[in-house]
Image (cartoon, rainbow, N blue to C red; front, side, top):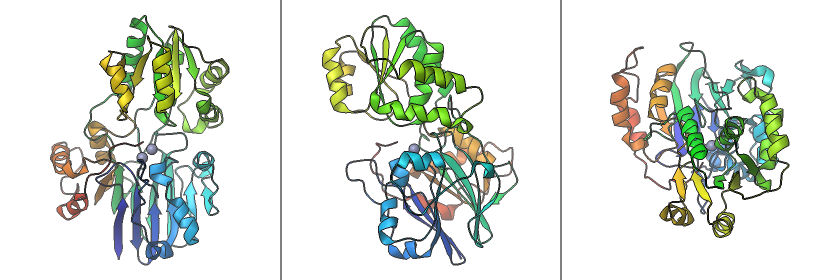
Length: 389
Ligand SMILES: [Zn+2]
Ligand SMILES: [Zn+2]
């Protein structure tokens, strides 16, 4: 029997974790906690754990990996499959980790006699991947967190039409938005170029977005860029992971690192400063630089940002780190699945609206495939915290 259990991540922004079982074998797709202070665990129990034959990790963010320690503590024997970059970023070594061999990109890899899988690039972060997994003859697609138009990071999909999936699990993190990332970058640069007074402070996290912005502004802008020490290792890793990046970026990244990671932080009117999203640091900068402008990129809005905003010193350029509505429409057309689970958004309960929009767009006969009514019950989850990656 084919069975799916949503252990977290649907109707909420965090603790992504999905249990899929077929004919007595089971897998887990990601194993995250909520991004808030509570770090709420997914609804995983020992019964799930005992049947697991493999755990597939899409990328290192805590909402996809924060509960892996529970499997370790319970003594799970299932291999934990992830990219080498994800393993490096996690730092903590999980004894069952098995890293992806780059030679297997888009090719079948065998886990055991019940499970085989293929993987590709999901564009969200260095080392982030999607999986196509065959579990005792049923094939599923798992997007992980997906960005179709990152400036630096490659994103692809399985070959169109090759597989009819039993189930697709799709990141819908920005389903309520309509954003074009290249346009956002151009608007950002235009704003910086036209604004004489600086410096510009960009609160940054360990995310593909941070690298996209920094490298774009370095390549196309005129100002000096400074990077918080705590983010240096993040940028250095880009030098050794070219396979995850679009073509022709190696020398740009090398020059960026040579230039921007070596100079001492300075806050003159010419500088752009990428600093960790840490309120104490931002507060210090707020007090030290009365001219500083804060540039924000996503959902996170601590009270201090309001203070900047109040003084006309905060501007937002929302950059996609998940699929928006238009991306989802395209993804649903590309991936042919009998059932869908849309996750990573407090808005997935509104997917009935999305369903009718997709149905109007009919290059392939999807009309009776998208979110069949019996799957809609899966979206009846309570809405919780919106903060996160
Ligand atoms: Zn993520
Ligand atoms: Zn996520």
